[in-house]
Image (cartoon, rainbow over all chains, first blue to last red; front, side, top):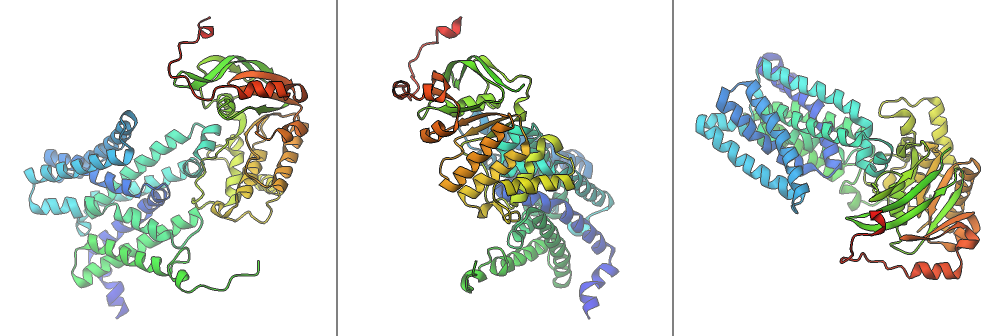
Length: 289
Length: 246
């Protein structure tokens, strides 16, 4: 009975196995980046960047159809251009970075939807917006897994300057020149993971696998390394459970994964050891010292 | 050795000088207090010394020392206290100049870190998240990090403001220990009693140098009055400085 519920869908169907591998790869690469975004109060910037890559992918689609190379390449280029462009505009004008990015991403989303509608069908549009994790083919899977691998390696390399840049940027500047490059490498990781997530979850939900596990982890960990481990674990769990939910209940899988994460988030807010609401409702006696 | 030399140094913001035509030398191994009213240019001078601010005119000689090898404690550290990092890891960052971004931290390093934490009286606090520390404990932590930096020149911007007397006394003892190790030390302070009791040399700054030398000679009533007369606000209608044109 349990086997039929939890294992059978993956044992019986290759497309489910594929989807699981894709989602687990995303769960390894995206949440660590999400933890840093959350700690640096850039959670919504991740969301904005996800929408910003849409026109790039759409132009790739316009030029070469549903070619992975064209769409991923277009998405990467658009992502970098927007990340840098928003920053430059913020520096050169009185506009702050959040407003500048908001302007960019709204325009990008509308532009992307328009471009896809010109050449593609409604199905194509849905794929762009919500992804098709159950339809990942080999090249897409290889792309997602490569992105996750590169992401982990780069994160390991920039770990120290990245952490220090978050907690005490003044000190980092006083002892090293690594701050600037580490920041840029980090933005590159954000864009890369969003492009990877875009294939499976679409532009509206790609950031979900990046941010929700990180936000969940905030309620379970007090140290950054453990926070990242919890985020990865939560993402993997939600990926696996979300696919099962979508299979058994016949629901679209991308949103099902994100909804599972949402449920885990609600549980964390309620009973999470670090700041969960339940500790406010049931106060315990204070300690002797 | 590691002294500092200022050559007709002017530092400032958007062409307005905050430190105006400073000339002189900080002898290697000396301990100098930098004193002056608000807006006198003390923090600006320190930012120039550690290389964060480029001079508007003149220059700073650091006797062969890279600006990044000078340990610097700013007045208000931009530390994100909500970041989930332990006191131990924060102090360990003091080893950056020797370890860089990838160097491993071995047994000897762990001993050095623990010794630094003990030297500031924070043993037992190693695993505390930095957000749970009080102001004084935070300052002690930053001093422990400074200890690990093992720098030949140390610049502290108002390190004893807003901390209690006991912590203050402990940290002053630490600074005196550095002095005995022949490190060059510059400290900005508003506490004239502390300066008179602890620092052999003082620079009285009021945008332009008012007096520089042995503390007793510098902190006279006359000099302090002169410093107080310095105008704090930048003059929006100022002309280009004629001295600078030479």
